[in-house]
Image 1: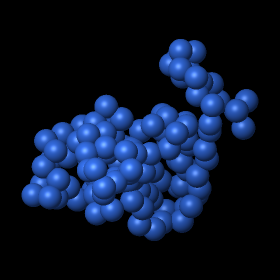
Image 2: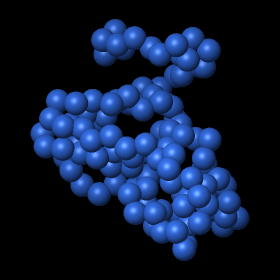
Image 3: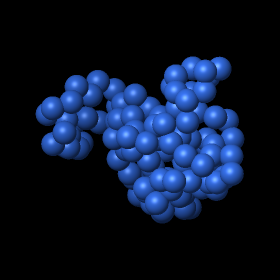
Image 4: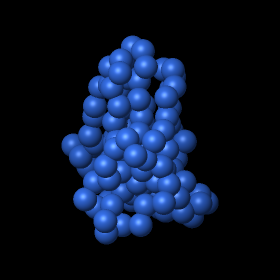
Length: 118
């Protein structure tokens, strides 16, 4: 499938090694971060996706808590429903959360290390 698309300009400067393709039915997802570029496609219906740059990893409480692994995110963190009392750091940057609605046949490219949630 790598021959079916062109790498973005940044690919010439950054050593991307992994590529993921995800096609799945609608269900609840938690925010996650993949160590590689990814394509996410919708075959039927609609799906909303929220993305956040890795620049905001501390606002997502990554590496903030001593009892979590440095790359872990809190289980109840939700990019769709930001709890401003429990996660004030995320609330401060919620205007930087990107949102896209994918419809049947749509695909979105997610750069490596971006946080995403369906």
